[in-house]
Each structure stands twice: as C-alpha cells, then as structure tokens.
Length: 229
Image (cartoon, rainbow, N blue to C red; front, side, top):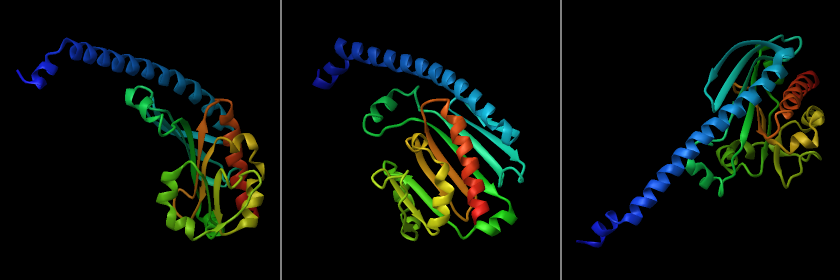
C-alpha cells in the first residue's frame, strides 16, 4: 500500500475532514442567520431614512444584497432617479473569514443617482473622485481617469487617507462642506462624472444610525453641487 493510500484511509484524515465539514456547515448556518438579522435591521433604518425624499418604486435582491429604487421630486432633490443598496459581508462562507485576515471586508451602503437632462447639461463638465487609500482595486481600475484630474486638498479628507481628484476645486470644496468627520471615517468613495450614474457614493456600514446621516449628506451634497454650478 502506498503512502497516498495510507493517508486516504487514515482515521485522522477522516476525523479532520468530518470536523472541517461540521465547521463549514455551522459557519454557513450562523452566517446566514446573522446576515438576515443584520439586513432586517439596516433595511428598516434605510426605508425610514429615504421616505422624506421620494416614493419607493421597487426593490430587488436577497438576504445579502438589497436595492431600493426611488422616484424623487426634482424640486426637492436634483437627482431624477436614486438607488440605495445595502451590501453585506459574505458571513456564511467559511473562507471569507480567512480572506478577511488579508483583505478587510465590511457591510456597505451604496447610494447612486442620475441627473435629469436639464441638470446634467448644467453640471456635466464638473468631475470628482474621492477614493479611500485602502481601496486599491478602484484606484487601479480608474488610474486613467484619476490622472486626468487635478489633486485637491480638503481638511475633512486628509491625503494620507483619501485620494481627491477634481477639475473644479472650488465647487467641490463648497459641496463637501456638510461632510462630518464621523461620516468621513466611513467613506469609501464619492464619484461625480458625465456617465450614468452621474453620482456614486459608497460607505462602510457599521452603525445603523449612520444611514440617515449618509442619506442626508448625499442629498445636501448633490443639491449644493447643482446649485453652485
């Protein structure tokens, strides 16, 4: 009998395999339950936060990723269409916890929207990219776009934590004023550009209470950006 056969038939390997399978199943069941509870908690806060800005026109997704589309009143919000998406960690995947040791992951809130034709015609020449220095993947993907814009310093977004690029520094400085240091700690990316969606923001979600502040900031930021253009 070869050493391979001995290893395959070894009781130790059988026990180790059984234990590994049990761990995978336990993690899957626990993670699934945790994500469902987490989504329910975050979803309730998000729905409440966006009620004052428009009417929900639909939602889609599952227990790890849910999206709400909202129809807004252009008189109140300069965006014609807004989408809110909650994206949860892959908690029911045992390998996720191993990967997380090397590449941090977290729950996220994505808010993106499109300007109507009239507003887009007014603001389409102004561009902005704010990216957390930890988001290497986005930096690499947008290297060409970042190189076409100028660096800009904002006190609330220190350069050791964020890459800030724009072609209209004065407008961006005015628009970003309502960003608190607390929200900046959870910011992953803000982008404004000519392509749809015209505005894109991504946040790290830790405390559900911050959802309302994130939604309110995007509302204030967008309106100031359009009004000052």
